[in-house]
Image (cartoon, rainbow, N blue to C red; front, side, top):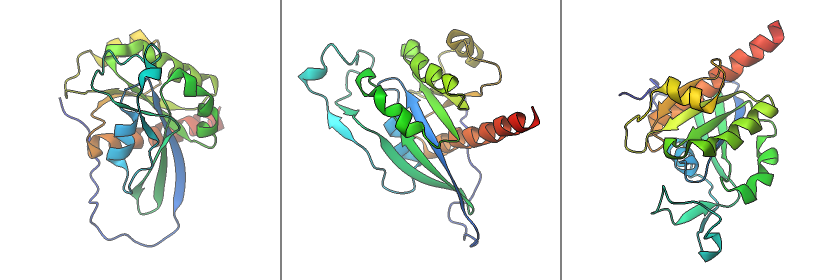
Length: 202
């Protein structure tokens, strides 16, 4: 399968002009790849709050599907990407563990949209993020993180399992690859614009 690519030449000279900025939140379950996606797409050195996992997390954080994971986000991840000469996105990754969910409200303030990053090995972990954004009426897209570059389930089967509306974009991505991660963020911007237009028209 192929992953979408952003067809802009990153080395092309930028034309000076007014610049707009927007905030996007990346959420998902523990170990779903949020820090990886923010780091892959950011054009600056990403700010991360990774801490070593200790014995205190035993029985609290389920890393059975990610046995080699030795760190975890305890506050947020932050990166920045210029999608065009006049649009800059600020990307905030949320902590995945339940005990840090109290931070999500602050991270979501002012966001135009969100990404729910999904690991199909632990599909139920996506429900809290989906519920959070739906309750706040924040437009979001679902990105299935293909850890081994294979999509193990049909996209519409994942949509059905997550019981999300047909209007919510859902796509496959590889959070390790910059171009794939860019396409996810572009989808968020497009969906947020469409959502805003529908509200204005309605």
